[in-house]
Image (cartoon, rainbow, N blue to C red; front, side, top):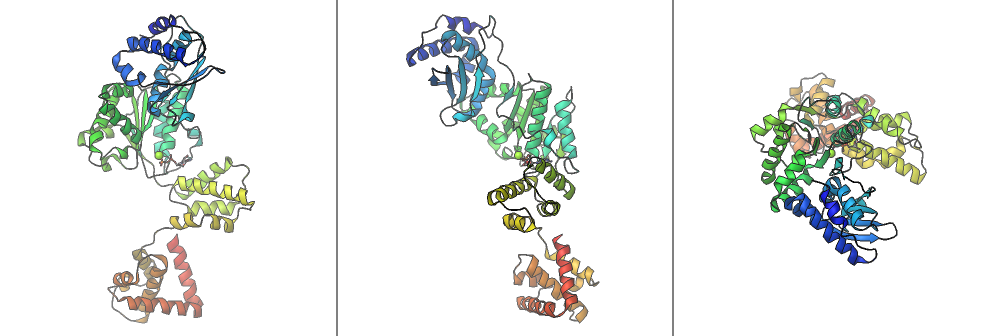
Length: 468
Ligand code: ADP
Ligand code: MG
């Protein structure tokens, strides 16, 4: 029942100047809110509000809450009502800012106080919990084989009139664009339905808030808030799975949200069935919707992502061979790729250097090393035996004939060069040979390489193939 408090408070208007009138006005406003909203809401969300600084010049008053989550909630549900109440109570307050107590003042949101109305409206619905990253939009998301299913699902969920599937479960390894897609859904949903209520939250944050609500005996309120969202998105749900105390409550809440026909999007670094210790009942509920994975980006997608990111860096000129080099060598995930590009751009500007292969290899030395493909001894044995057209079994056999002994030595040599395995371990993998045999092979091949151009080119070729 919004509205009543405004009139009630109007009579308590106090003159300007000093903190005492502020405090008096605040007491009156609080009394009105308590009457109108009920003890539960008041105790949970409004009582914790503390009066912050008042700047008489701009007429701005800060209202502070203990956490960002609470500040966002109050912002969404009570900003307008609080603003009106203040305006009615104390004309000196022309604008209120709702934020977190001194710890995080810069994240506060500003509310313009509207001119008093006869009938104040309900608090305006809107984005909630965390502001969406402006860069993370569908337009900035590069589509490829690895992510097109997830992309299309995300788009459909954001755009479709009616709920087509629920929930949408997006999973994939780190840095592949899950968070980007969730934010993009939020932006698009908001663009199409400006009044819809959208909640985006990391699962970690959800957990913290949920535990706080449990302690305060206020989970009903908390769940009601979630259920009231038209679109609820929970990122990185793997943080909750396995934490038994919150997990069950969490998935029950999810269940209720799905039943209420609200759109739910969940992201996770693994598939639903790989989440730790989730009840089969809940698992099947999650799988009712659409499960879409994001795979590792292939070369083409990596190339397109680099080109797209370079569009945003018009001052940075990156030659074609460097673009190709990066796409080939930084294959672990998109975040790394992005980081590498930013680093190159920053260093090139700072040191006033031309971006070429030498420069890039230097700047990205550690990233490139970390992205090197892990080569296994087994792969080396396969490649080498193919190359010399011998059976792979000869790699571990006891035969000493030259036509198998030499390739075996080459394979041992490559194992030493291309894997982090120790000499004894390599020996074991070659039919249980002693580590001195491996040392001998390595020395032998090193010597022969310098004398025999054919062997040298064999080894170069094999190395290139193995490094992919
Ligand atoms: P995740 O949440 O899966 O760990 P993010 O969504 O945080 O990954 O993505 C990491 C970075 O890579 C972000 O800056 C994001 O914009 C970018 N990114 C990932 N995939 C793509 C893509 N397909 N197109 C453009 N940028 C992408
Ligand atoms: Mg993420």
